[in-house]
Length: 193
Length: 193
DNA sequence: GCATGCATGTAAGAAGTTACATGATTGT
DNA sequence: ACAATCATGTAACTTCTTACATGCATGC
Image (cartoon, rainbow over all chains, first blue to last red):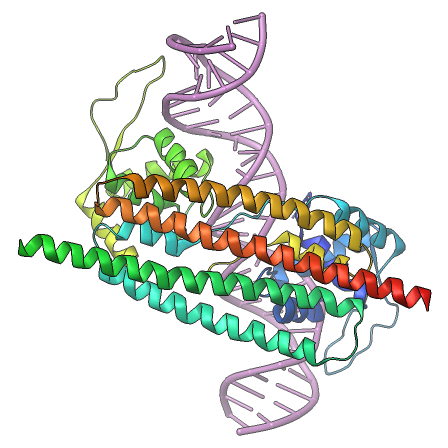
């Protein structure tokens, strides 16, 4: 890492803006809340935290406590860090670059391997149903909360996005399977006439 | 590029399986058909084509014609290449790793910058509507075709996926805007009482 | 005794983007 | 004249993942 024009810094700043964090707690937060829409590895997190301190966007809390056998380093966002976070928030987000490998397989496989594609679609439906159930779990949890705080809203909207997305992907795969079945029947007819 | 365990090779093989290609035509094909779900740069394409030849998965057609001022190099898939493509097709596709920057902004901005987030959502709706219109254009085009060939099916399913996806994202953003409006009213009430 | 979770970190390498260089042709 | 399209390619760089090293505590 050298110039760091990437986005890692902003998810770190964003999480730190809610409460002071350790590298480890940041990783866990991302896995819990953002897993479906964002991911970062330790190999990105720890060096970026150091960078943020160098740039005065975060500080290490002086009390580096030893909790369970291992030291923990707690990072706190600075005012400069909050300003940088706010600046980034006001910028238009990048257009997301999607990479759906299954669509490549569908595109290249429908001419030759209809059965294989059909199986991939089944697995895809399963995956998306599972993710959807998870999102609905989150939403039910948020609806159960009485607290109407702002912090709830962000997490709720994220889960809602997942609900819409995974529903759509599941529905697409079901529709795709139907089209593939039609195609198979067509091929069968052509053979028999 | 050294070990090449990535996916670039497969989209190249897939496109070559339909017809011989030049690096340039591959780039254009990806931009035309897969832009929304896959992307490759020249910096990936040209070195990977060389690699495919080295590995015997593709061949350069002997007739390297000079067409318009510049030489063109046409690559043709070999039998070994087709076998490798088929092997990859039968493997389960990777789980897609999405990165929706807008969701980070929503998550970190709902506590402090509701208006900004609302504007980002408007832009997001616009983008998704545009993409949706494009997908519907493709679908209308495919429906207009009388030819029921297999090759059509792949492209049609890709466009259909786009239709489902972009509809969902647009609908989510509309729903999100509503929730944000509720939140604003709530904050307003709290102030006035 | 062994796996898992907590916790930090680095090094190597893979994967991907961007900018540049070259240069003819065609359209505005 | 200038931009765009066709066409190939490389180098520098960024970004990201994976594997590894360390080591205590806890539960099975």
